[in-house]
Image (cartoon, rainbow, N blue to C red):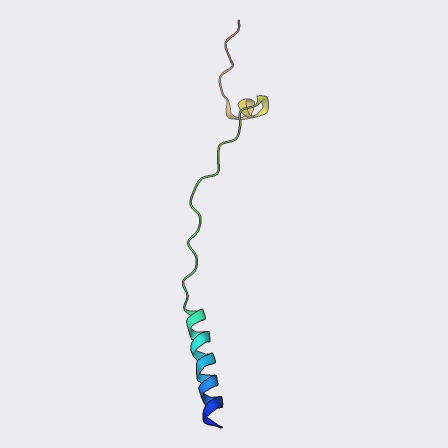
Length: 53
């Protein structure tokens, strides 16, 4: 094996090892935005009825 090919092989192995040890991205922990209030949502969540006029 020539010195150049062994150097290329060593570089590829180092690159592979660096990719294998990269940390996983952190999960997104932000809550979803609240749903807009409509008649169905108010019935599902048990929201109080608006006052009568």
